[in-house]
Length: 400
Image (cartoon, rainbow, N blue to C red; front, side):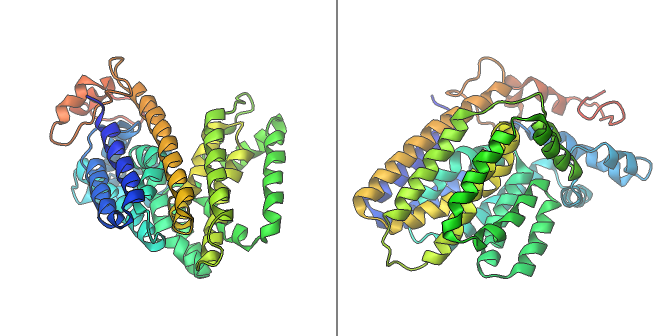
């Protein structure tokens, strides 16, 4: 039997294809798929590459309450963002179990994702879920929680503030997001790119390509590493000794951008909301520009560029709604195919954190109702069940 992760994707993809034949079905198929994805996310146990790490960090939070260890706790933290620390302290102080913490985060991310989709998509909302599934949902909602929360809050709340030109609210909101994850600093670029005239956008892409060439040289990489270190965010990603390009990831971004451009130029020009779509398109362009600039450091590039990728989840459905039927159908089929490849690739990658018997096809889904089963698949999960206190003086990731 295939992995439940594959089954959920197949359900969402099939529903998206059905909406091409019966557009009115999107109204209820979207909520069926959304409910399945929400429950799937909230009830997981030990799932995601960072789950065990977040669990350990959550348990360590109790040390911060003790005055004897408080300062040392913060000096040796992995995730030092004060907003995230305060959230954990609050829930830990309320004696909230870690699994309830996971449920709360999952519901927050999915609630604002739903708000984002409903705010901008007149139709083809199920296609939006197909677009989100491979990377935003499977990677950042399942594993990169802090970035996932930051993205969900940005697109669910702050993008509207930006489009309504409520800049003070926007700036305050972005600052607050930076207390959850420092990568939210890139959101300060969104108001600037919206102000750029259309004819100048191609020059920004040209500058991005030129900058990517400069990233080959050690002084440029050292400069980026130093800037990253100043804000305490991933300086190691831009090491002068580590230069590589993830061509597969770059190709996926270029193909998706190409689909969006084709839909943009072939849309019904007399439709409304063109200015809003244009603003969202410019915000989405930052996804590709940032990645191109930093593509010689694919991990760092991916973690910064992803902050804008969610824009495609509403931009494409908005353009589909304004496209002719043949173009619309071809685009959705192509999107489903691309998302299938990306989902399978990502699931196979996640399975590498498990025992060798686990692969992309049989990647297990463990819930809070069968927690012990995680021991059959993840060796490090044994730490959860052993009564050994954490010693942050000895190591940030080791148990006594």
